[in-house]
Image (cartoon, rainbow, N blue to C red; front, side):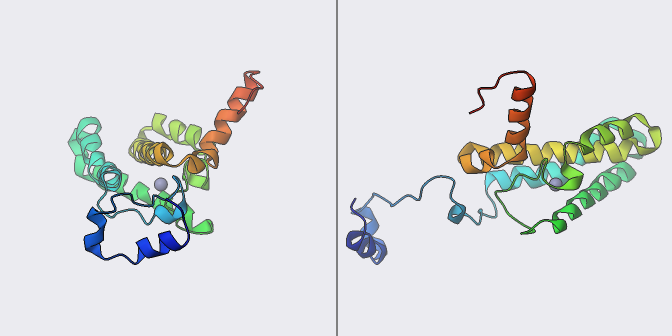
Length: 172
Ligand SMILES: [Zn+2]
């Protein structure tokens, strides 16, 4: 459809006209104006279920004798999202937090893994690592419909770094 006048006329069309003009002007994929995300999208539901419900399952499976305490400690590890306050803008729905914020960085992973080995910090470590997993799922979900998000992510940068390290110079 030619843009310009026709597009403007389409924009002003009455709701009833939609049936006669089924071709919607779709915005290019991956553009930020596609957002804000729907509050109850499948992605949002999965994300917050993983953040709030799944730790209860982990607590019951790994720390059955004190699962309520374990659950609360794991919920408390959500405080690691406070590192977002250092970023500008603080909230960007398409930015992948993994590798970007200090407590979500790749350097933090081995530290959390070490905490997993110490009995005193085990619950905290499970919470922190599972938080990173949850955020990774969310990133991959975003990447699936936003190539720009993937290309600007630290996960992509890490992938390129690993490829270089392995001697595969042909980085696309
Ligand atoms: Zn996070």
